[in-house]
Length: 124
Image: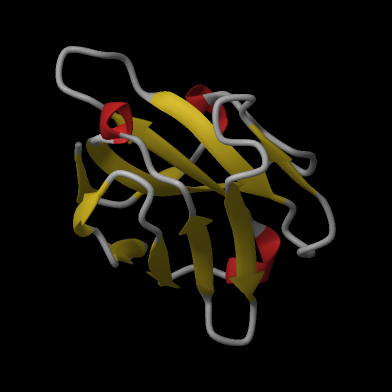
């Protein structure tokens, strides 16, 4: 049974940083590209970042490029999202997801497994 468990969310002030983690189990982690998405109330799920299964190569949405960094530790079956200079409009539930796509998938539809999400609230 595949499980993706996000952690590290919370309440922060504008300009603060957070580091999200996503621990994976029940799959061969190193076979999967790993992505981060977020969904705010009343809005569609938004792609943020993805990292290649090898850890070599990543891609970011323009909205977070230069502020967010995705990384992975295949020995620990964990993917991370370092988020700096957070903004109030980035308040959302943040999800990690796993995809067998062999490239750099940015569309939610090609992800095979999803976590339950972790809430990030950024106050002004």
